[in-house]
Length: 74
Image 1: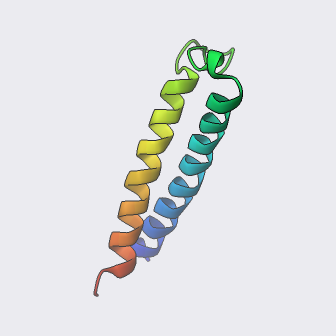
Image 2 (image 1 turned 30 degrees about the vertical axis):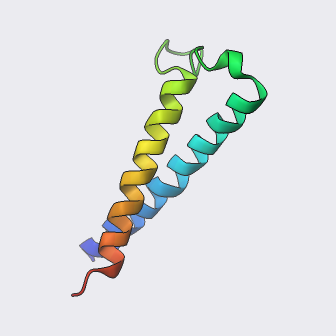
């Protein structure tokens, strides 16, 4: 049961992290001048470029964990 929860969580973090990274990558193509601006008006941190970096790292680590669990021999 715990393995299924971790596998589901890793897959979810991978998908949403990748979606966030793709969003920022598209923003960088369309409006590159806004990358240094804050992501939301609620708080000054993170900036759009920092959010993209965080999303990429979360996506990469989550995909790695997902594959470790998926292909691990029990």
